[in-house]
Length: 332
Ligand code: SD4
Image (cartoon, rainbow, N blue to C red; front, side):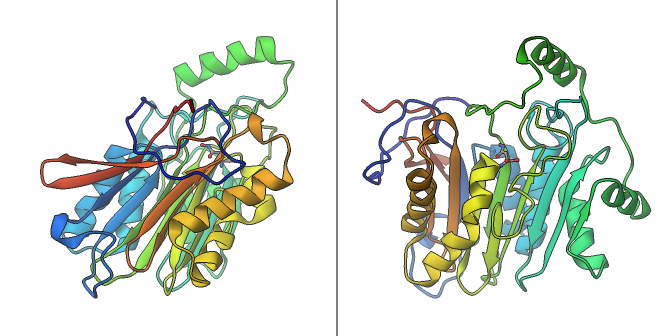
C-alpha cells in the first residue's frame, strides 16, 4: 500500500492514537451529476472496496457501467484480486498457514439476502466464484476444507498449486525465526471486501482472503462469516471488514454496522461505532488492525479503522471519480 494524501475525517475520541497503517479503500462511483451523497431517487451505481484495489474496483465498475447486476460486479472485482499474484493475502499467491498450505476463505451475499461461503479451501484459485456456486447451486450456505474443494472440482474449477515461489520463500524465512507462532501483522491486511449497488439500486457484497499469514492450520477468520466479514441487507446497505478477523468475529462487526445504519446512522458513523466496540473491549488494540467499509441504500459510504488517519479523498481519472481513504497516516 502506497502512502496517499487524504482529507482527514473527524476521528472518534479515544481512537486517535496510532502511527501505524490504516486501511485504504477505493470507491468508484458515477459521474459528478450523480453524486454518491445524492438523496434523490436517481440510482447511482457505486462500488467500494477495502484497501486500494484499483484493478478490482475498475473490473467491478465495468460491469455496473454496462448496466450489469451488483452480484456480477462483485465477482468480477474479487476475481481480479484473487488472480493477482502480487497480493499475498488474497487467492492465488496468498501467504500459507504455518504448515505451508494456502487455505482460502470467501463469501458472497446477494440482493435477496442469499449467502454462500467457503472456508479453509485449498488448491482452487477463485473462492469467490465457488462461494457463489455454494449460494446458487446447493441447499447449504458454507462448505469447508476438502468438501469445498471437492465441490469446486465438481463444478468445473481446476485444482492448482496456489503457493508461489515468492510466498514459499517468505514462509521459509518466517519459519526460521518465528518459533512457529502465527503472527499478527498489522501491516499485512490486503483482504478484499467489496460492496456494490447497481443501477436498479440492488446491493451485493463479497469478501475473499487467504487470511492471517502463517495462521494455525484450520484457522478461519471473519472474511467468510456472515455478519462478521460481510453483511448485506438490500433494504438498508452493506458492510465489510479487513484486518484481525478474531476481533471482527467477536463483535459481529459487519452485522452491527448494518443494524446501526438501520437505526439511522450514516455509514461513516456506523463504521466508527463498529471500530469503537473493538477498541473499548480490547486494551491490546494498538497491536492489531481492523477496518470497515460500509455503504447505504442511497449510495452514501463510510470507512474507518482502528488506527488514526482514516479519511476520504477524491480524485479524478478520466471520467471517473475515485474515492479512497488514507493509509499510512501518522497523526501529529
Ligand atoms: C482474517 N480478516 O482472516 C482476515 C485477514 C485480513 O487482510 O483482513 N487480511 O482475519
